[in-house]
Length: 268
Length: 160
Ligand code: FES
Image 1 (cartoon, each protein chain N blue to C red):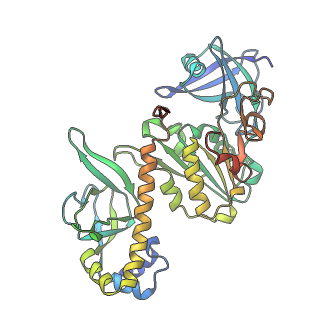
Image 2: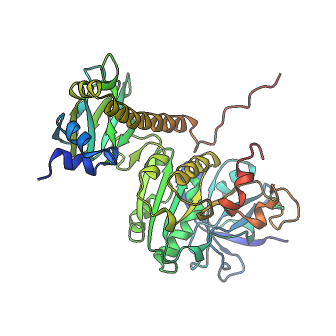
Image 3: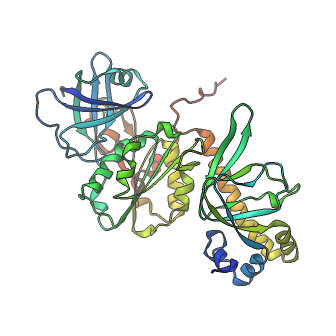
């Protein structure tokens, strides 16, 4: 599969080392459709290719990706500026099960950069395309300076109740200080009628799942997005194999009830 | 105006506690209001009370030389602050400061300890509830120490 050439239409530095790129096809026209939760393979010429989640609205005709400069490929992507080019393959993978949300309470739990793949879900709520009976977002980060999309949080309150918490901060920070499991544990839930979308570092997801199960939420009502290194992204190379699943093809979004046997195996 | 007992009944910490126990506990309690910036507790001073936060935000802090106050966590509506009243030497281990107007019920630790000594069933019930909070805070502290959002990890242990 040959990458298409895209041009960087916008670039925002979220915080040092993490930026959000808006990219459009170099040939003109709109970027293709995608589902919330899917990802693209972004190719920084000469440096490598990496899987990055969609983090914009499916209606924009632009792909939006938030990138943390970490490995060779992401460092090169982070260095790109408006008007420069990159290669794109995708979109790939399964999305969040938006059809599960209608009429139920939607709990979105995001940790750190895990907010990026969940933002399209919030856009879908704001656009009225998805109608849960109610919705709440719990968003945890390391420090206030390392929170994504802070300029949008106020607008999001139109569609859902937003609870932010950071592990460390000065007391001027108006949100909560402490780990995300605390406000999550204190939340009032109709456990039987709740569906959870969860994304963040694996350790954080493990602890959040413990809290959610303790509150009576069923393992089959918890969906999470997994991250692994990808190569082909189409289920051929086996690079992202995880138990019987290929994360690129069967995921990255999985139902916890289906994968708990794999999720709990260490070093898999 | 609601009585202390009614207010305690609404607070998650006291859910499921028999009315007779709540009545007994409410005899040790009083309503109090703290304005923003006011200290509710100071490190290493006598811990004669614990606080049931009804409304508002409280910072649990410690003082770091050449830094100032360092906030370890914030507490909110429905939380409890303080277990130092339970164990000798009955002194606060951290500061607690109101970050906005805080409404709380202040419960007299000495009065409660006396009641718990006289009624071990009530004492055990309260101890279980406090132990749950202590365990939850310990878990939260461990998670905070893990620094899960950081990209830096300690190097893997060397296998010999
Ligand atoms: S990346 Fe090749 S099989 Fe998933």
